[in-house]
Image (cartoon, rainbow, N blue to C red; front, side, top):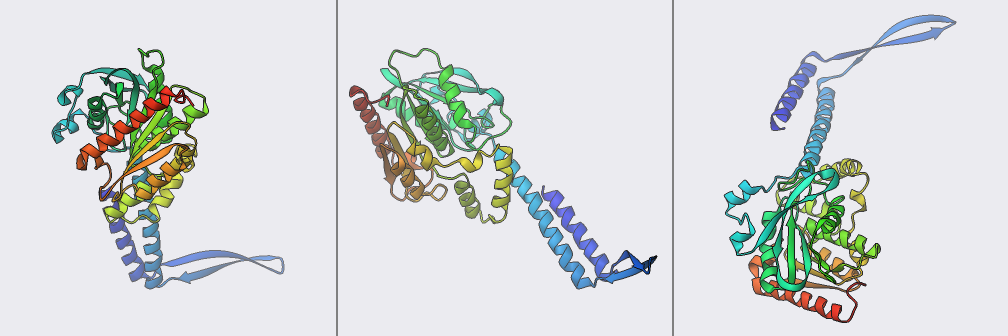
Length: 360
């Protein structure tokens, strides 16, 4: 892309010099009608160098904006993949055993996005529920192992499921759908899980973009009357699709206008109009199960205010704020408080279940 921009700008400079030196003439042939006779005349319009420079600068700016917008859209749909090699190179865990967990490799069919890999990890509670974890943008099942370990160490679930979302990690999907089609994948994963016990429910647990995916999947399950869903946990959620995009670009000192606006139109068209329908506050309002929001007050990617709005919209929502903590840093910065919040939520779900309200 940078090479294309280089030659584009160089060509514009050469063309402007030609205009400035030669005072390009645009000749327009005008047909006049006079007394029934057609008279062909020639009109010469003369542009001086200054006008030519202005026209070229405008044309150049438009071309650059279009090219950058195209690159912006392509990059959002094709995030860098956190594969086995990438995780290994960073020194991250690459299998459950690296963190002392016991897991089985599984494959899930994500429909139009092909197959994807994941693990079903033993949670330590024989009569517990299944926790399905959903990673954020640019992450993968490898990045979720740390969160899975928290649940497993607390022994609050029977099993924990992690997998690669479409277009990310090592999934076969070619493009990320930015949370538009991913909620449907969550339901596919749940449907393909085997070995359900009588009365076993499911808790959705998502991080960042995965948190929004979990919220929408949970809302759809509640609207469909699925009794299996027990609760939803989200870490660092946002409300609208462009919030993290604009904030990350600002942090990197990139201009957001008009790239995000134009790119949003194109992305929304590519995704069948689903991008502009994303509203995680509305999804939270449609939940019929308890919701736990974990959010850092110093989150510069997904604002703390968004987390507050999501929690407030839910019928049974609560937010645990981590003072001065950034995006997805909560577990690392204050492990004990994070573990305590998660444990307390599962204890709440167990109490809800005892009262017969878990399926509401």
